[in-house]
Image (spheres, rainbow, N blue to C red):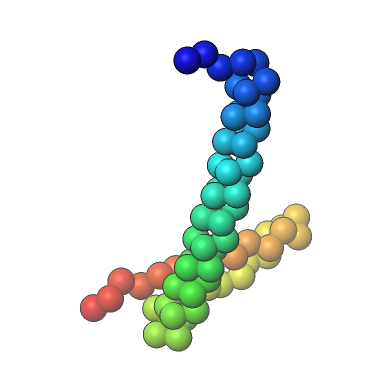
Length: 69
């Protein structure tokens, strides 16, 4: 069974759309999970952060996570 050029192009377009959708969905879920982890660590007091302003006016945020004891 051979595939025509039109079928090949349509197959690739469909696979691109499906792949793009799955990538976007995965990214949203990972962002949500990371956000919830940060909130939980902050609530437990294990997440600390400090802000430092450099000489050229750029603000740096240092985030530290303490291991469980």
